[in-house]
Length: 147
Ligand code: RB5
Image 1 (cartoon, protein in one colour):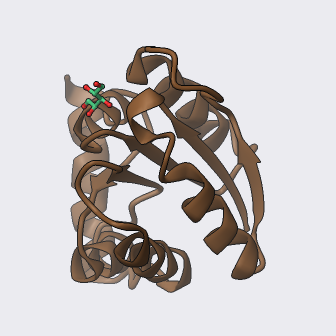
Image 2: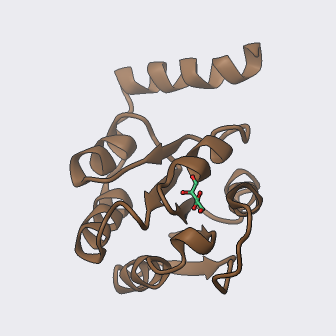
Image 3: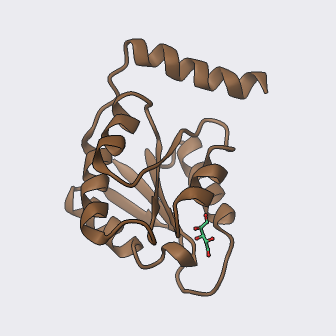
């Protein structure tokens, strides 16, 4: 699978852990920045990464900011994106299995590196279950059409 990873200055410390874990799992990783701790705006990076997913240049995105919140709020404004802001493994698995999330958002000021690795692994190895969950995901997509 191909993953794009993006972060703001608040997420920069966790970015290497995410990229290394994805590579260890055998995935292709493209890091879109930011590359230093200079203050920047998370929404710019969220949009850049989400566009790659929507345009099918990547299968998934992982976005990291201080809390994961700004990244997830921004990502969920992009049509076709279902972003989950996650800080434990159960939600990471369910975001794929039930919600068919295509973007994972993490908070570098919320979780440590070991929990981060476990979350990334759950997200990257769990398949969408479809069935009744497809109907519910279709209704999420319809909200975009209707609003
Ligand atoms: C940056 O200080 C911080 O606000 C940002 O990384 C993120 O936590 C916002 O949601």
